[in-house]
Image (tube, rainbow, N blue to C red; front, side, top):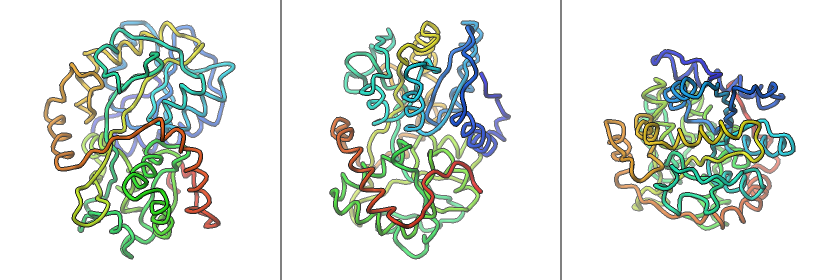
Length: 362
């Protein structure tokens, strides 16, 4: 792999800061020529520790190197689209609705991996262009060493105590950022959701291009509340030694905290330079061998025949206990996405001058 494995104790801040800096450069510059013995993976951030754990065995078995480019969910799809006529990547991993968008843009090659058979029909594309790799839940996060009175509702984030201490990722470039729009519009209705986000903007410090950088900022006490996802937040707290605690918010006082599933989807890039190796990588990542390790990183296996087990699997179950799960119509989200983004830019950001694409802490 192109990522060197840091010590377990130092994995967190080092991994996030190094990736935030190096990936920004990679995504803004041309990748080197694709070597015959390499496979390129474009991936949304959050799964770094899983890759570090499982990819060396694949590289040894197949005799190929896996080169990883990590960024926000929308950013990796945008990169693949820019390169559409001369693809540099072989496999992509990203969140909805961006994985569906990649399919609609013709970026994905249909590939019915034998290991997709145990992925539920609702969690994969009928034509084989993508399937759920790691299941997950949208969440918010706090620094528990700083925030002593955990916010329970969306209205709580409007309190003066959070002025200038809230940040969330840009919905145009990050899956977890789009998730903020999905959840608030689902719970409040579209007009009230954007009214709420406009009020919240007074407390928002800035927006990040991807979501992975936010946990570093939380741990540094540069912000107090951010958006995220359950897998990444729990993984950063344990394996990254960051002061991060995932939380779920309710629409209003007395309601259950609410969220929805936000899985990492995987797909084969159409006309990628090393499709054979790309197919083998997908088969491997969807194998029971790898899927059984997903709970170790607080993810939920994409395959129904692999249980959410072990100590960390139980931690996921505990974290989600009592939280109401709502369904998401991703077809509707795809239709609404451009309208929501434009409305967010106009009604929420407006002329505020807020940064929308923070890549690393200043």
